[in-house]
Image 1 (cartoon, rainbow, N blue to C red):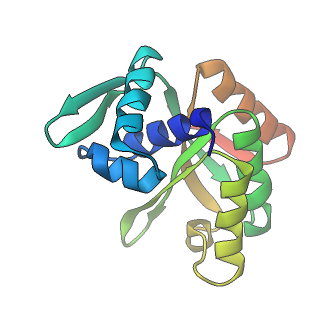
Image 2: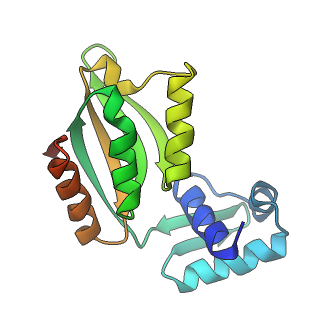
Length: 171
């Protein structure tokens, strides 16, 4: 994995965690030394990530990215197109959730930021490992999308609408 890709993956991984992650755990996960992780964290801090170094590990206090939650409705067969559109415009699909009439909010972290990850997700669904949450709510579901700025989020929504996805902006 290239240095730039590893740093992006480290930042996404840390942003998905609520508890500190040790340098050793990051080193093992990304197959590099702990010293490389220290350098990567230093770089991420200089790039604007508010990363707190504690004795238990690293935690992102505040991300330099913006997020937006919006409601979407489509058929399961359109999921790959939806996810690819989001990542192609520079977004990360942080999670998916639905509001079930009996169970309430059901959510799952995704952290999908590349076509490769979209492909892995879709293959998991198609091979029967699981089913998408949208199937229990008639196609309605929510995504939290993260991007570098609001203009990118707006472009993602615009493109999805152009592709005839039903998007209901959530403020």
